[in-house]
Length: 164
Image (cartoon, rainbow, N blue to C red; front, side, top):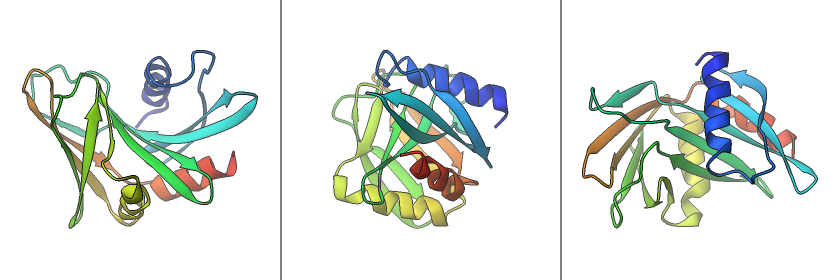
């Protein structure tokens, strides 16, 4: 992903899930992942973010879609998918990394692992995988699929964790 795409991704993300006063700053890119920092109640917080390499179906306005992983205390992580559209209420978002399958639950345009205890398992799979595939259904009933590169995720998370 180019530097400009990362900046646009960070700004789009900031407008939707970060505190109003937070303006993310690009720290560094690692492969297809970018690390961003922002001020959160006087402290610096960081997260790793990437955008899909492939989106299906073609010809559909997918909006801005991201995978985001933020460090949380004691070596834990909070992974989430943020879509450029509202996800279908009551649906499930399926994530596959190699042979590992994870189910995310949507709320609005964001989805998280159904069980918080699966957060670190998903991140571990991401660190050892090459590609993550995400399948979701929009509130309009459109089935979508995204392929995300995992190149750079381990280094990005190491850097994001260091800014805590």
